[in-house]
Amino acid sequence: MQTAIVRHILVKDKDLADQLKKKIQDGADFTKIAKQYSTCNSAKRGGELGEVKKGQLVPVIDKLVFSAAERVLHGPIKSQFGFHLVEIKFRTDFR
Image (cartoon, rainbow, N blue to C red; front, side, top):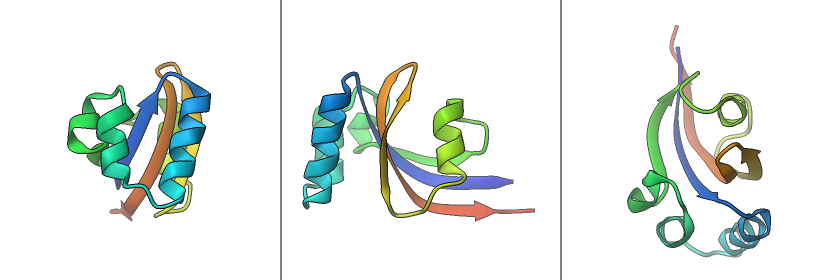
């Protein structure tokens, strides 16, 4: 079973997501940005989703989390909830 440690930021507006991504890439603290801007319940934890299992997230995010590079800020990715910035901190594959 695949699992991943993930954190993300969810906002309603793509322009804001682009701005936040640039801030983080320029050295802003992901945790502080998540707490200030994210509309997800995970905002209070600095965007930390913790350990997630394959199939647990919305399909577009799930696909990214279990196929994209680790320790890279991905996005914005659009889902029915808004625009996500996603960082895969670590991924495992237990068989």
